[in-house]
Image 1 (tube, protein in one colour):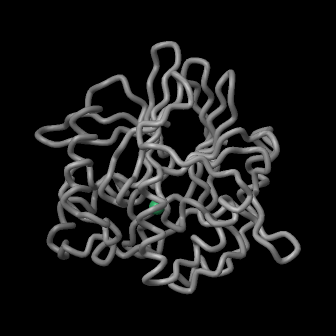
Image 2: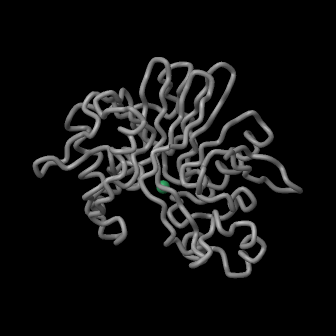
Amino acid sequence: MQQRQLGDIRITRIVESTGTDFQPLTFFPETGPEDWEAHRNWMLPRAMDTASGNLVLVFQAFLVQTSRHTIIVDTCVGDNKPREMRPSWHLQQLGTFLPLLAGAGVAPEAVDYVLCTHMHSDHVGWNTQLRDGRWVPTFPNAQYVFARGELDAWEKLHRETPQPHLIDSVYPILEAGQAKLVEPDFAIDDEVWLESTPGHTPDHVSVRLASQGAQAIITGDLIHNPVQCLEPEWIMRADFEPERAKATRQKFLDAHCEADMLICATHFPEPSFGRLVRRDDAFWFEYEE
Ligand SMILES: [Zn+2]
């Protein structure tokens, strides 16, 4: 169990899986083999798999327990979801997510809020689970917080090309009356709030935490791999608006470098917690073991 205490807030990583099938040149399609030469040595073996040379990505949720609320940020890929565009996720049955949550002492009924950084399929999966052939909310008492602009953008896309993850992981939440549509600066209280970090998707948000003077940010997908601290210009293949994604990433790096800010980097390899520091002329992610 990977936990951090941030003042009165406890942050626990709920790791659904770790993927090593992400080829660098397709994940960052504008890069060529020569771009990776300077990075391979420091990336191996943590951020780059030694055997395959592929990028290592963690798929996880962050459980945030404050003195007032139990909150889950993002809900991974999910089990039994039809994801034909990505065979390794298609109808996966890992069975890891709920037992890990139980291991952290949290029953699904106890979750008050589910926060969604964005609506890619690896961030909304456990919003729902299959029960008697129907997709039902996994967290029956939670409000699921979605940025209104994010939902609008995906619905528009869905009208042009059907989006399976909307059908099985977002619409059942709306139909159950558990969705709370918000602006991207929504705050639960003075300890947990959203921050607009657009680009990877139209209304992408990060989650800010503060307690007793300590601060943290859960990145979502404004950054995918520690290599982007050194190469903020590198565009991940699914970045919806590349220029905006770059600007957001640069702003994030500038704002939190050498600052007292715990970075909870959603897809970064173990332990995914760290600080941004300056090394030579670049940014560097220093893991907090
Ligand atoms: Zn993602």
